[in-house]
Image (cartoon, rainbow, N blue to C red; front, side, top):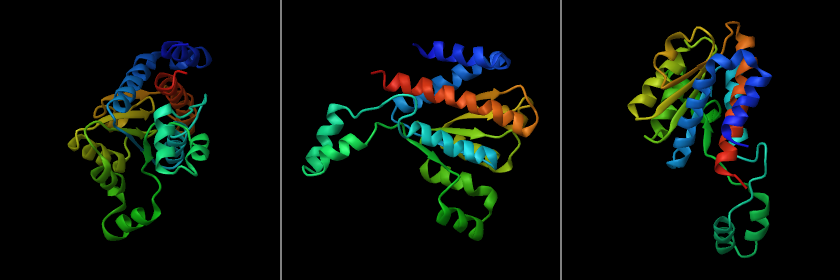
Length: 213
């Protein structure tokens, strides 16, 4: 099954997403190219979208829809590092796609909020972690979250691409993102209900590309 087959499966289940098919495909390409170049994805959102950001990190950092056994090279490196535990650890680990959710990190978050301004929290983390091959994956149902607008500015300054999941109107973020997936809803919970199958499909497409066996 190809990545296009998986996208078609999504649209068969959610035909209302057909108008954003090309945007989903472009988001996949941006994320695929990021990982292929050795980059990472930094993901962020507020409220329910914060939970979605964590969800995405969980799907890509470990097995999602299929097993991801370590390569022979990875297993050998672990055994070389620890002959006693390496084989056991190699059976416990899965190959990963590097994603950092910016919505956690309690000590860092509270330090920024106390010493500076909470609205700059995501931007501060991007300034510290962001590199030119990385992607900011932002989730905003309105497209107008100020902390994500600041994060986008920081990402652009770092040479990163920005992929946005948002609602029908797109908000201010839609015109700033390299790729904006504007699902056809405006009510917050309905937008979020469509974001989940979109990012699940993106995760599935990426997993099958990088771990085909």
